[in-house]
Length: 427
Image (cartoon, rainbow, N blue to C red; front, side, top):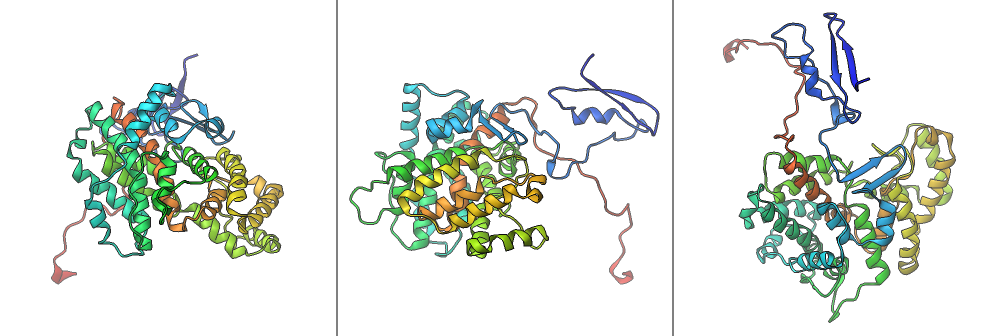
């Protein structure tokens, strides 16, 4: 039997056959279902895209019920254990893991484009010292669009490749300089002798050392965190990058839009909310009382549950182990004991099990970032730096997809019917 869906319109008695492909029907096929010949046709209504696929993608596979996350088919657990962020970025962009020569050339191209225009230093001085670093990141990405005007030629694959490299290379520099400005410290220029993450740590934390040497455990931890955050399918920020990019906007402003989406507390600020919650609990002995308040509807259990995952977030498993390595260097974060007790109780309580509320990636990542010396304002920036490779791979895939057009959702109009203008004197 052919993969079709039979729909009977009870308004007219007519039956329609709709093709099923990859477990989906095409929304446009519903347009044939009409009451009259001049009828617009049936539309689907799906606020927040809860059950609508907006694209075909070969980049990231996510099964929330099974707790599976794969980049180009590779399990996230294997990549976190064996790969590096720049190798994963290559995988996302090119579809396959690089060989030794390809990886060397890729790393060289990234690390030789880490410098940014000196104008950005002067532009930083226009911000208050306490301006949020994420707001600056959004602005600076858009500003780079004015420096690289050839980036607007988005249909040229070679030009696209150049700017993909530039963006991945410059994200840590922009982020580090925004951080240094907030502290009143002099800016540190990139060092191509260090790794991608080592260079970022140097630009953040170097004070007077002639040569900054990042701690290898912390350097590796940051690399793993970057791998875990590199892509996550069609989330809010990725959809923003694709939506803006569908207008053939250049990659800088497309990623500025994605970063603006990530700026929101429901997206990139979730791990900060976890820290606030743990500080509010204050002590392990207060955890049962807090759990009771959540069950009574008087608060939220931050860092648990996910729009997609209905199982233990595979990234959270990796981060939980990573936390032990980091705390062995930095000292144990006192909030960790609260977090562990919270997780223990929540995972054994029928209330949370029934609702499939498992720890997600945000539950432990904030604790690690805090232990490494990052202020909470930098957390969404630390999310944006690695996610740039995912956004760019999605942006390029969208441009090469012949089925994609400029993004333009439909709406259900709920306003008044046609009415005549009333002169001011008669209102």
